[in-house]
Amino acid sequence: MDAHYFRSKDQLCQQFPFKILRYSSQLLKQPLHTHEYIQIAYVLRGVCTHQLRGKALTVSRGDIFVITPGAEHGISAIDDKEYEMVLLDFMPILVRDQLKPPFSDTLLPLLQQPEAGKNAPLHLWLHIGKSKQPLVEHLLQDIQDEFEHREAGFEFSVRMSLVKLLIIIDREFRKERRKPARQPSLVNQHPIDEVKRYIYDNFSQDIPLEHGAMIANMAPAYFSHIFKKETGQTFVDFVNEVRIERAMELIRQNSHTITHIGFQVGFHHLGHFIRTFKKRTGITPTEYKKTFGIQQPN
Image (cartoon, rainbow, N blue to C red; front, side, top):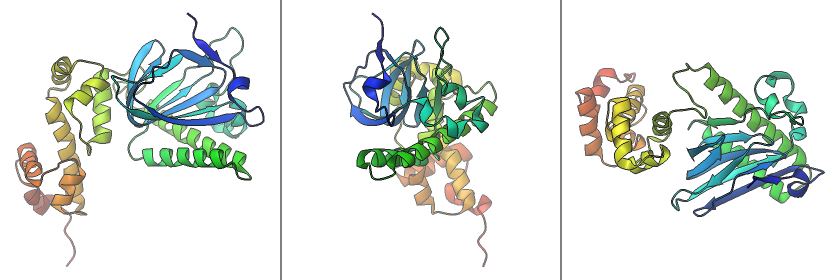
């Protein structure tokens, strides 16, 4: 059965061809479909599956997609796990003029309406790092508020925020392209690399092995085996190493107490933090601070 096709005249206002939707679900099983307009999809929380380019991708907070006209995709819940996503639908003409000069090789091809018989340009899948997530989510909230309240000038405000969002996406895409080829970050990324990326961005939160297995689309026992084979460490040891490395940075900056740093990097008990730190470094956090911390002036 052919994928359902959504036309702009049925989904978007012709005077201002833009729409924003935010939803959370545990049950959604969206069929494969295409649309005439561009769609930006951003995951706010939880995990879900995004069918794209014939692959089932497990996505989580910070993952953002720019879906081109004619690209077949679909979003589905995973085992009744709740997630929340924001969708921006718009016609390319809405922002094309603002993005012309500096974006000829990155975003602009995505904003071109494909000619009949020609394939649409590749769509983007990027992960917005933890430091940029608040900015992206603030922009999305501003866009939603403007679009819902529709006060005088809302069209201009929405357009400008959308352009700013696209500029952020463009910069993140350029940054990813500058990374070595051994660090893939787009659709062809190895499942274990996806998990490692998630750990680096979310180490301050609880990350059970089952969550890593879900991101990698593997059974927990098999995921545990593959993760150790690929990294040389157990999943728990890898998470703790990332946390301790970050704790060492914070201790060297001497900006917080040892207790505060332990909680900040994801440990719920000070004793566990101290034991894990000493196992990793050979000394306690307090000893590390005395040796490597920035000395405060008298």
